[in-house]
Image 1: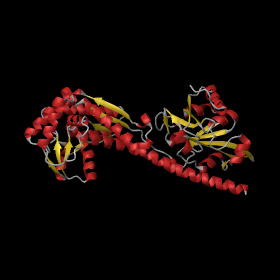
Image 2: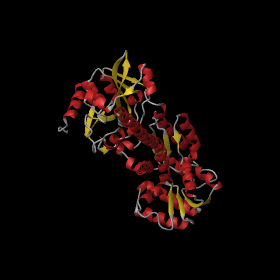
Image 3: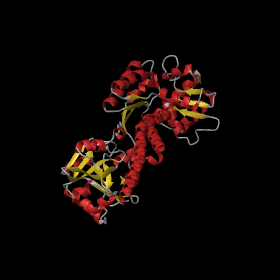
Length: 454
């Protein structure tokens, strides 16, 4: 553990230790002068950078009570803006932000170093008000960070613990309504079992998409969603869907209901065949306030976005049966679809069973190439069989110049990941907006103080 801390940091550590608070002190990636700057430089769980909403923003000002000046600290999340009208209403007086010069003269402190620990340690009778959202859980690990008494050091704390030990701390609604965040912490549910590897593949692709989409905003493990998996061997009954329809639905119903009851908010099925039950699944999810993303919906959106109208469609006989068993039958009204012959469908079915038994083998790869060569007519090939998805994933050069494979399992993963990232991205947008508002607020404050000096 690091022991060569600056003197000011050591005092903060002593304060949290004396109050039995959980904490973690880490060195920033350089000196930090503002909330937005600090959030980009904080070191948490081995990663530099935290969401701005996880950085505690603190300001100090004063108000008059019976003619006497009373100092007051205000705390909110870094992406939020304090609402002085709400604060004034609580105080029954006007809250005036303390100029830098008075902050230095009265407390030997400066902006960039204001934090609840400093004033809890040196000025324990000063009032502090925390916005109530500071105590709410937003994103894992559900902690906040602030400066540790030095612009090069940060401290991670559990805000509920801190508020409980500060003698004159209060919690209230003190931010603007526009800067309040309502973020749903999604849990992704995956139903699999036909084969189990398809669910593993889907999960891997979801994570891969999230990592790529976030780019520089990716924060490692903490950027990933909670994932719930129901892997049920009896899902394999769907390989004979016409003879085992009722039994298959009972299994699907059981799995989807279990995911919903465990708190899944976004649900996908890693199987093309059981998409047949999409409408029933959607109804179950709706009753549990969850969202079901079907393969058809995901693939259809993809085709529209790419303006693809004519393609080959590979799957087992139920998935390619656009009359009765396939949820993809809605394609026939909007696209020109090439379906394999009965002989080729039998070969595809055989490949599926071989993959279930032995996963990936050279024999399976060779058969797949042979079937694709014989069964397809266009350059766009939709792969609607998870076993083929798994086989293709093992090949480095699947996208040959004359053939383009559109894998339904991969597209479903991308759709689920994008749905998860909608709320995550909303947070990033709010963060950027907050950065701009903070910059404007700081500019106005500096201009006001400059005029006062004149």
